[in-house]
Image (tube, rainbow, N blue to C red; front, side, top):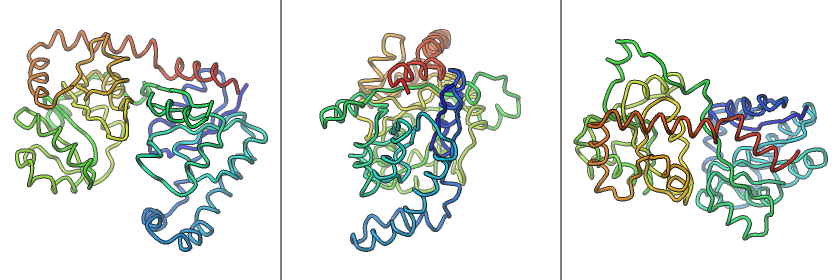
Length: 348
């Protein structure tokens, strides 16, 4: 039996999804979340330290990042895994990666492009050190192979069926959450936030509820018709509540993060599993994988509202597409199948 150590923030559902997939493939799997040992103040300081002079960053790394590396290395040595999967680097130094590689294979699972979303001074050097880079974007795979990393692999996994599934909703839940369209996601205070607001504004004349953070209000000056559609969210919505919300609605407009050049937004898989139709912004991988199955894709924002209206008016067709997408996803991207393909590719 192979032993797998995940170093992934537990707030991300990918941790439980991967754990389930590995266990279904007869592996022993444990997730260690160093984030539970990081204070809010330390997070705040670290989020700003990258803007400071190198001499100050170096002192902060010695105090903060050195300890994080030591703690994760302690867990590694205690667990003695054959394979380590690290989400977005988790502050690991290249030296820590090399120490782990003495007895295990180390893979970084990317959630963000290290080129589009710089993380720290050592993320990219650590990335080039690992055995495998698991890329949810086919373009990232080409980028890293072009840089000479032979272990860059395109990897896509669906949602954990234990967290997202079709359920019977109560009358109270329908009253609280029901709408034709739903969107759940924090805003960005950058151009990405404007892009998201512009995307959602295409649906402002429809019955849509937008659950987002209070910073979204900065975009009302450009898109005033969004304001009555927004439901402010004070804290992170649980996966259980999100699943219920998706089950109460009909269509979910999925915008593409600009950092994903070709890749698939994981929300598409959440929607399919929860039985709501994703109406996804065009990206090459989305079209390549889901286009033949019938997933509606937004290639031009100006046509987005008409597409949503069409599927609201054609309920049978909408449900047929959802059913086909669920069968396709279960056959090709379920946690068990995705992890089996990964294990075959890396052979830990």
